[in-house]
Amino acid sequence: SLAKMNVHARELRMVKRLLAACDDNVRGKVRPSVECPMHAVLEKCVIHLHAITAQAYTSAKNGKAEMLRLFKNEPTPPLWIPYANTGFELGHMVFSLVGGYVKKHGRKPGVLFMEKHGLITTADSAQGALRLVGKVIRRCRAELGQANSVDRQAVSKKQIEKCKENIGKSLLEITGERKEVSYFTDRTIRQFLAEENPGQMLRCGALTPDELAFVNGAILWLSNGEYETVEAKIRKVLETDQSVPAAFVIRNIGLFIAAEAALVWNIGEKYTLFPSLLLPVFCLMPLFV
Image 1 (cartoon, rainbow, N blue to C red):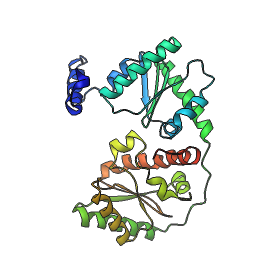
Image 2 (cartoon, one colour):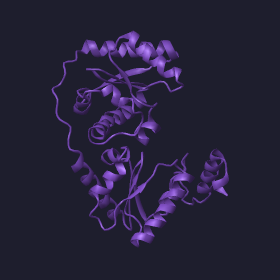
Image 3 (cartoon, rainbow, N blue to C red):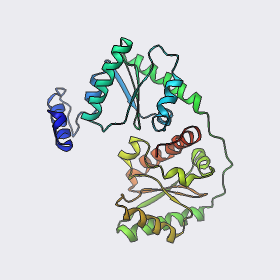
C-alpha cells in the first residue's frame, strides 16, 4: 500500500496516479498538485491560500487555541490541521480529521487552518467559498491590529549603492556568480526595523510555504553593510549547508535582494510581506521554537 512505501517512491507514485486521472487535455509542462487528494475530501469548491493574517495564527505556538477562541461562537468551528508533509501524509491526515468532524458536527468543515501552512475554505459554490475567505480574513485581522507608523529613516543613495556593491562583491567572491542586487523599503519594512530585536525575529526561519518555494530560505540579518560583515555572514550560512541567501536586511537601511532580474520582483514581493507576518506573530503570540 502507499502508506508502507518509501516516502520518495510514494510521492512519485502519487504524481503518476494523479496524471493518469487527468482527462482535460491541458498542454504544457503542468501536473496536478500533490494536494489534490486533500482537496478531494472537502466540498465541491475549494480555495487554498496562504493569507498573511491567517498565517499569524497557523505559525504561532498557541495558534490553535487562539483560533478556537476567535471562532468560539460559530456553530461549526474551523478545523485545525496539525503540520504534515504535503502529498500522501497530509491528504491522509485531512481525510481522517474531516471524517471525525463530520461525525461530531454532521457536515464537513467550511474552514481549515493548516499549521505552518495556510488557510482553506470550502463550500458547494465558488461564491460560498469566497465569502468564507472574506469572513476569516476580517476576523483574524481585527484581532491582530495594525503596525504603528514610524518616521522614514534618512538613508542616502550613497549608502544604498555601497551596500548593494558589497553584497554583490561578496556573492561573486564566494560563489563565482554575479547577481543583480536591488533595494526595497516601505512602511512595513521601516516598522520592522524599528522593532527592538529585528535580528532575533529573523532567526525564526521560514514561516510560509511561499518563502520555502520561491526563495532561498530565510532572510540574512546584517548589523551593517560593510563588505567584511556581509562576506562573513554569507560564509557562515554556507558552512551549515544552507542555500546561498537571496535576501538581506541591513540595520537602519532596508531590504536587499540578490537574484536574476526575472526573480527580483517575485522575491521582493514575498519578503516585503514577510515582516507583516512576523510583527503580529511576535507581538501577540509566542513563536514555535
